[in-house]
Length: 289
Image (tube, rainbow, N blue to C red; front, side):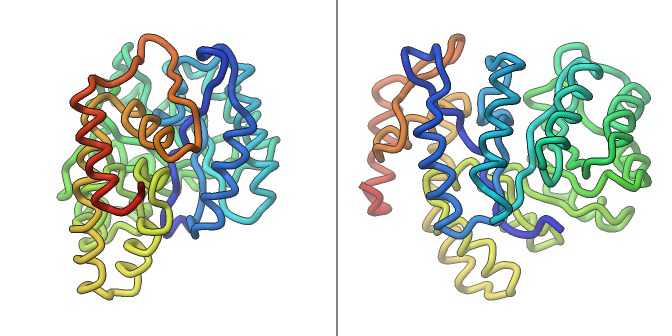
């Protein structure tokens, strides 16, 4: 259902961060589709969801769905640390025509595993296919393996984005349930696909959608020599896009390419100069600039 590359879209801003730059977002969406991605994920972590208002969040999701017009899949980021908020966002995404929802585990309030099951089950009851999102480094709460297995019994919970950095979890999921697994780390896409993952929700695809798609589709076709070459070529970029907190480096890279303005909302702010120089050097080596 979710094989391939799903780009975790940035949210471009203008006017010093006061407004969403929908013209730039329009161009980004079109470029992503033209370069072969399987789908788009608006308003996740990379889309700076914590600093978007509820209205902005919904407008971005609607805009991307309308722009895509069924050409690729849209997995809307509609998670939250309050179940009522996540339900409201998910119901809106379903009405707008999203293909699925990406549900991050609630952050800061650190619910128990029973709380996570209740929270995610309530959202899944809405009927929109759910992609679970395990990223304990961001949220402070891991989805335990046993929790994932129990949630996999819900008819609308269909996949998991695994961003714990633990490749071994892919094998454990595949042995225990039928969820599709998507890597949540570009650098671990190929290691995870080698043991059963079917793709990636990718930060790097904002910058190199064509290369990332080629790498993943080569893996799906078991063309491992080609996969290895592409992975090694892209690995320095995968690494440098996390020189600072995501999405700061990827927005800088997109600004260098002329796709967006380098604008963030506080508390995010620009990288230090040496980080910019290192990332720019990697982009030059790849022939992107």
